Image (cartoon, rainbow, N blue to C red; front, side):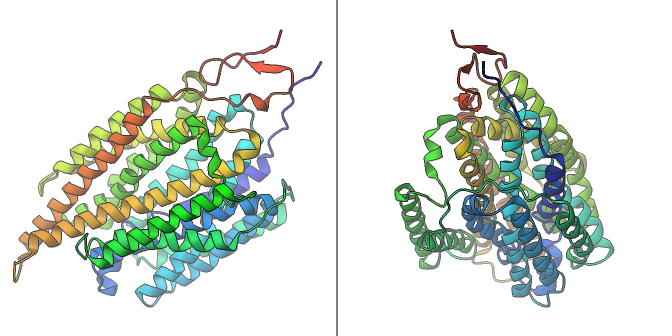
Length: 493
């Protein structure tokens, strides 16, 4: 008689990975509140300063396709130490940056390190816990992935107002150094190695493809959408991304195995996560811009407004994971996306006099909605994959999160900047009131488009079903029903 056996999770490994990932993810949106101060210090436009965020996410989207190769080639210890070393170097460059290009180089170096940590942590969690406990485990993962970047603006608001945005990086240096030393001393040398090949042509196609696509989208804010500067990079980028995907489908050992999209629940989860991220991440930048540029509020006030939403996203993510284990993904995702869609639309009706309490309430409800979406949808999609595809699935999840977030920021900030330029076209010397009104109208239009992204995710969630890969069971056992319905296991008759 065969028995199911589950190796005990290595909590030491998971704890160190979560600590490192928390610091890395914290930097993902750390500078959102500081963007107005950076813009003023370096004398750049709102459209240009967004590169602080989009360059970070762009590099993450480019590096993440290599993580499946890295996880198959090297141990978790080797990957973690290399990633944190890169992150430390990037934080040092950014913290002591003397000009805007130097800051961008620092952020891109940070991203090269931190982007490896997300799929590494996700893959470790998937391998460490059995399917019936993954909802809870992935809830802990979401605690890091969403609480850290969400609370970043609150902490940075206090630091920027009291000191300088440079301190956002400098204060990290001793913490990252300690994590590196602890990881070097305590991390076990666990390997899940398989044959792996790094395809240079794929790296070039993905780097140029995603890079040109995002550059074109960002350029749309300062140029006409149909101008050569905007349209040419977008078209060339899309062609290169298509060639990249087609090449992966033909390779025997692809960098990213896009065949995971043959699994329906994984594909639906990817669509939902990408659509909602496009609205979510852009909102994290638009709200600080509105508060500081339009209403003249301080960085600290901006951070305090974002804090309750951060706490909701952080502490309720494990709860949504447990709910997923009991009731499945569908109704959680529908309810959450309905809240997120409605509140994002309500953000599109802001005025100069919109109260702090109204903004706070909307942001909290929006955060609650997103908490009900991400953990269940992501876990359900991963449960649809056989074990050998989990590294590819986690890498693709991470890549799509970063790329969709970067595209969302680029599109919505470009819409804001483009509409603002359109409203001021022909006005020789616009007054402060006219400039602020044009920016407000641009922000409202961007939030309206963001609500459309959310609505796409909502419609897609109607087709969700609980997923479960029965391969995780030993031969001779089968699951009666998938996760979200029952976890009882019966022997085949």
